[in-house]
Image (cartoon, rainbow, N blue to C red; front, side, top):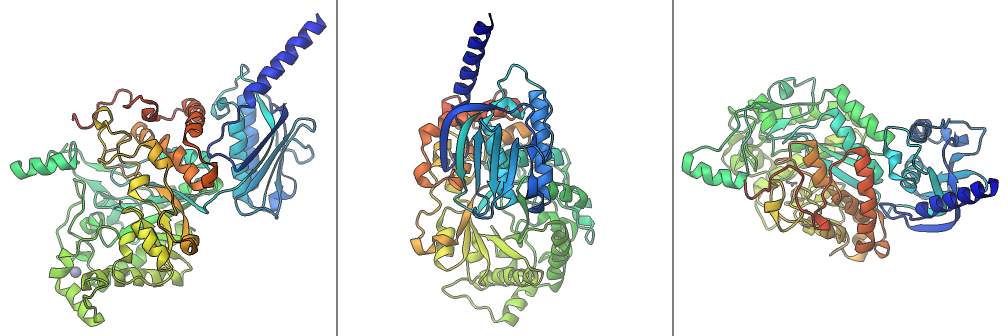
Amino acid sequence: MKQIISFFGAMLMLMACSQATEISIIPQPQQVAVQKGCLKVAGLPVNIGQSEQMDERVEWLAEELAERLSLVTGKSSEVDNDEPGICLVENTSLAPEHYTLTVEPKRKSIVIEASDYNGLFNGVQTLYQLLPPEVYGDKARSDVKWVVPAVAIQDGPRFSYRGMHMDPCRHFWTVEETKRYIDVMAMHKMNRLHWHLTEDQGWRIEIKKYPKLTEIGSVRKSTIIGSLWENLEYEKEHGQMKEDGIPYGGFYTQDEAREIVAYAWNRGITVIPEIDLPGHMLGALAAYPELGCTGGPYEVWTRWGVSDEVLCPGKEAMFTFLEGVFDELMEIFPSEYMHIGGDECPKTAWEKCPACQRRIKTLGLKSDAKGTKEQKLQNYVTSRLQDYLAKHGRKIIGWDEILEGELAPGATVMSWRGAEGGVAAAKAGFDAIMTPNTYCYFDYYQSDKPELEPLAIGGCLPLEKVYSCDPFEGIPEDCQHHILGVQANLWTEYISTTEYLEYMLLPRMDALSEVQWCAPEVKDYNQFLGRVEKMFKAYDVLGYTYSRVAFGEPGMKGVPGGSAK
Ligand code: ACM
Ligand code: ZN
């Protein structure tokens, strides 16, 4: 009998190991060497030894890991520096954010080594993905084999900037919803959240010096129904768009923003706030109309698109305002970068505005081959903010329009109108972040059958296209060091629920993470698709909505198609 039990015991062990050796990790690690055997993790202690001196967050990471394992295995794992177990070890020879992960069943140990906190954090994310997807759950699962295969992994990212953008302006995301977004970024080893905090449709961050920004600027009286394009047609005939008549608002207090910053920081993510200026500013103009060229009145916009009403750089008060806003932001956001927007700023108001024209004259700005005098006025706005922020030790990122005219050295360009902005920036010696709409706009449809998908802004960006993004396309080899990394943008004009937000995000975020993390020779779309199926199991456990369009199943459950609306 004993023999039979041990035989079945060994069989179970083997089955458990063979399940576990199907290693499926996104983003795909650089090197994975699978060895024989596997290790039970239930009850393993977490040991941080000397690494607690590396970064104050290591203790948090160890507790988090121990708590998660205890929760799902039902057997207590403790942080204990006297026991081997799962060891988080400092190794200064490794490059930033790189890690090694070694599972040694004989020693009953898992060793994760890194030279910095993000490296350890990334190693722990890989460990979770080596475990069954139920590791992400919120209850003990005694029916799950809590084993990891014996492996030796060496891994590190291709790019240092691995971003995801979030738009709480067109539709607002609560602190909890934002944390969910950060959680899924962290799973994918991303390290920058670009938080787009101001828009024509709403100002979303408390600024104590300017309370009307949130009192007035954060609420629109109504929102258009359906697509902007259909509404533009409707407006031609009826003189107005179709609106829902329901006030819509929301903003983050400074304490809430700090909470998000800290939450992200523990997960290896820096939050970069964006104040989109001088265009896309109706939220601020509704609150402080004196900041515009005409003095208003202005309204928080109820429609999508690009407004001709923008900030007035002819007025010194506008600069005082922006400096006051950034003074408070710098207190909340420790990021070395502040995003100053700069996209889609029509110049029609400036052309007619006496104050703007006076400023152009005083500065001696002239239209020439490099740009119009109004474009150069925008360069002046960019430079003044760049100088102001530099005095406080911060650098700027701006959308690729900041390249028009003349851009001062030291700015970083975010290329969104295709890759052209990034190519031009890198050739001109500027750092660039690639967010080309052609590969990285997650507000686009996911298939060429929009009638089967929820209403989106347009375009077509299937999973495979995201995966095929080459951030160096068109960039001469000697300029490629200027490409800091890659980011996807998820504008939310048509996205009003977390389910829809996640549907647009997943699994395109999986593809993005491999563009950001993996060397091109490691990438393989068909093999990636197999690994996405495993991620879906994790998303099921976590309750994330995702799209199966890439697997021939278009549409989001329960949501009608877009074009039909
Ligand atoms: C942008 O999509 N307007 C940057
Ligand atoms: Zn003006």
